[in-house]
Length: 396
Image 1 (cartoon, rainbow, N blue to C red):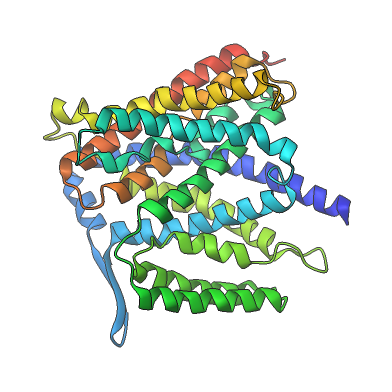
Image 2: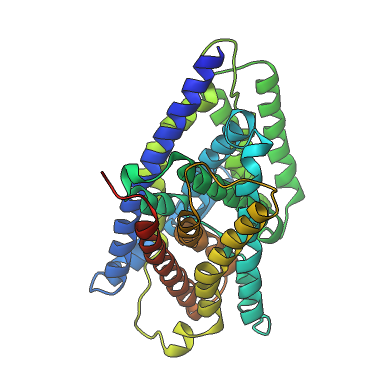
């Protein structure tokens, strides 16, 4: 049984790394296509499609949102369901289950959270319109980051991939907490109570040993609907659902691992590219130097590029220097610095957090958000690739 679990975890890691790396390339194409369309004669079609209102109603109960928000509130809930499943697996039987394995990447992730937020705050502390975006440069896009690392193939030590992935997963966990605490508001007690009934149903299903995913998904849709109407961001429903789907069972079948396996390709090649296409399109018409060089854009760029590398690498060096943790096996300081740089590729997650931070902001804030995220992510990815190219062993 132990060998079977170990084999399943190893297979899950390989599948995860392969899909995330390839998915990052698809993400890049989707983002580029969005920028091209937003600055072409097709811009009106692009904007009209994203603002197309879709309504689903049953009697007097219904949801009416533009397509853009169906993507951000609906499809991204599926992404967070997958994140929740990955977190659960790693905590129970993976890289996050052992204190020895989690100490270094956890400390690195904390540094990569605090320093970018501090840089952004210092630049925008006197900017009441922009200060709400402090969390934007704290995120890491795991798909893009692994795509950069994946370009080097077998030159990359497995321990370095695990180190980067664990940092990114810790970043996702931090993002979940940040969204729940700082970007939820106008709470509806009645809707929260209804969502609570759905959570209670998930608890009962779990305790009864129900393994049919359909039962959990039915309760999950109910929870998502009422979380959406509660004022808490709907994507958090995905994490709640994941927490109750059984990971272990009396036989070799794991409902959680099975669902994770199903969702990976859909998220990597569908959900995230669609999100990138819907959120990355920025029209440069009317964008002046005040937006490009303004405090919001500068805070994001410097937070992602300087803050991430300083926080991740600085905390890593401090932990190793103090003897709190050891460097990942087979790595050197150049490799770790390269990883710290590509942690600044915030792209999808930074855009998502920014869409919440500036949900009701005007054109200038949205433009500054997208320009800052894209610029900071590209700078981090290119410099990270260069450092890794010089630090990794040459291909044989």
